[in-house]
Length: 364
Image 1: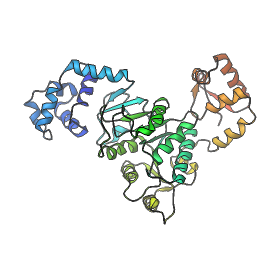
Image 2: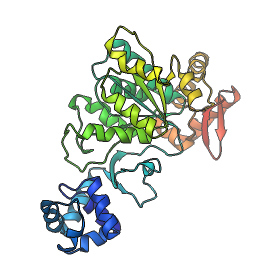
Image 3: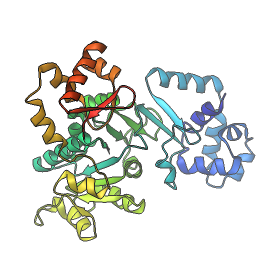
């Protein structure tokens, strides 16, 4: 087995979570050395129970491990561990970062701004509408959005992102990435894999156990550059994410609410303690120190009125994130020469600009 296979094995031993993996690696140095360690050597690791040692020894079956890994890859699921370049840099800043991650789709880009959107599960219609609006506007400004795919605010924000051209929605799960929870979000779950990704530190087939959700909140916070809180009552899970964000040095953004409505008690408390009050997308962009074109959404609406049908199709899929000509042609169903012709027309109309070699974006 190679290094990656040993890392995969270590992350899939029954009863061995992040803390025990950390202890094992501190003691033995690498997953391979853990694999080779004798039973009596495992006694040196203080926080291992007898059952844990039994599970480590009994799981050392290279054929079974390779079979499990191959089965996972056939499902389109990726595994990345700490020593790989693909492991997110933002997570490495966590004291209790998971040694391995599973994901379908992609991981959030380290170089692209990312905002977490969190809030009440039993959100009001107004709260869900605001979440969708801000999710869409964040995406239109080239910002990745990450949440937990819970009902209410989380999923409303992610649906807003998925409505935007080039929108990138990510979800950190409290289950294995092969499980959609809650089940009614299956369509969103599938769309995120095409336009972002779903991520988990838990092995495949892990069910939605209650204590997993506070654990996943620290990853939502870690992936983000700022956290937008919408409708958080006292004691809500959203406040846990916000508190973890503060500990990690993240900017906290809050949409204010009625002081007589208990759904906003936690949100308003965050504002009293110094969170950024948000009434428009500009507040978030300013808070993150981003200097994107804040009027991009309105300008796109006005510009599309004067465009031909083919131009509208191409222009609608562009945003502030550069896209390659080949991808534009593929997603619009156009031949490359036709797509290039449309892009040149949009450039002449001062609506689109070329970036690098055959990359295009909305003109700033």
